[in-house]
Image (tube, rainbow, N blue to C red; front, top):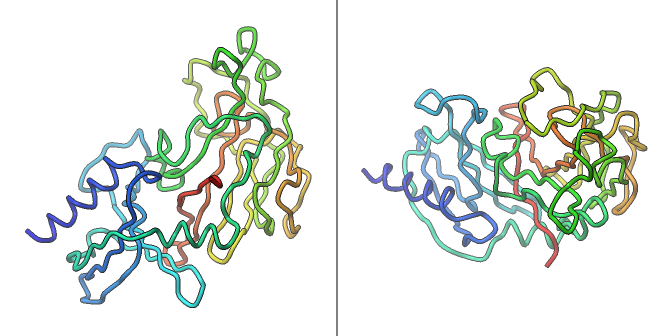
Length: 271
């Protein structure tokens, strides 16, 4: 019963209260092997795509954050291994403090005059853990439209071909640049399952990465191994990969070595 109540409390925190407004909770959890893990609760992740059915077959994971010797640690465990929550204490966010102290807050949008379409909470939540805290930006006119005319051409979109500026400094560790841009589809029904994104992955801190997605074909101006500075031009906005209309998608990630995969973690703009 205690395990069930602990799980219900975590679900309520995750699903009902948006991350950017909810209080920070420091947890101590006991795992099924009787080991204890302590850290700030970040998220419960569901390992499925939005079009896949929920159910007991879908793995769920809990992510906790801690700072040890001024270095970030992320504890990522299957929820089924959590025997119980021994302690849940509200406190100031160590995660936000770490990002701020290490200059990992976004100071400006990656594209001038852009607006947030989705940020930390939104339709990316169920994207196999890759998109829980993903941001989408576009440029809107006075009518809140992202395009002029009928929106059927790439050039109709205000954000298309705009320069993408790195919000953070770091090391380029991943790149795809040669994929074609999709023709806009305002019905959002095209089959994009075999599409590949033009993207950059930037290592911005120990265990923290920034992924920037949907660049225009052959527009990226940096290469793997390059050091980039904040506000440096990285390329131009396109409509490549899993994208119906031109926009820019980005998220912070951490890499979970045990599962050999990246998972999305929250990002914030400087207040």
